[in-house]
Length: 107
Length: 306
Image (cartoon, rainbow over all chains, first blue to last red; front, side, top):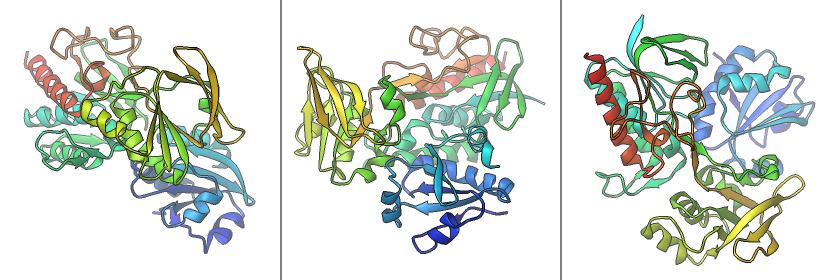
């Protein structure tokens, strides 16, 4: 079982920006109900499609500088990075079928 | 296998129905929703008026307790969405988000309500870019900023008060000249030095290239328009019932709420019951939702025993 790993300011470049495959970053926080709801769904997607799409979590409380840098004003916010660029942003918790549809081009 | 009872939705109404139905040994299956489990209270902070909690209780904690209570009595909890329902026959057929089908003799509908949007094109475009429907989720990102809350009911006032923890100033925009919110909450907002009231005002546009920078406002009395800078807009103008799955098969009122027979929870379809915010356009409290969930379980139990 692959559950989504954690990124911080120390490994963000390495894990996200320099990745050879697409990376989805889940901007979340402990106190955000919808974030806690979508977390397990992302773990499932990571488990099923981890070979094509890397999924990582970024705690916006611990990493507020990164959250500010990427203009987060709503969480959960899911950013997909390809070659270091944000190519897709999904805002709000969505059911798995809806997320798979939105992520279809990456998985 | 045909189940006795399936409950769709999991706020105070759905969980209370599950507690009562499980204790009546109806072995209920409850579809909690994949991302909506717990319902509207999951996005609130402190609930001060739920009887029995002297010092208040956090919305998510209250829902977690109800969930555990339902589970303790044997309700089968499924964290998935119902995506299709055929409620017309004696045996109801429901399909979930994972493609499974479940059949049941009775169904309790408790899908609750969703946030209402103002209905502006730019509101949608800038959603998540300064426009938000969840103060508890997003307030944190507006530290030391000047933000607007639109609405005049309990949720608008609660959000405005909550947001003063982060924002340097919160402007509460309401199209009338008095608040609809309960007195204690309204007083709290009106005396809060960080909250400014903007009466008789409606939001007619949300401005900003890639994030909210200002709102275009109109005075509802004089018709005068003005522009004012804000970095965030929290929309709390009420709710719409989540009745879209049953629109074509069940009797709804003009606003889309499921109609029930008198003080019961019986819908126009035999074996289908409805409760909570899906039905209630008047009270919409956690305690009234829980009460109607209890009624729905008792109505379903009576129906199944015949």
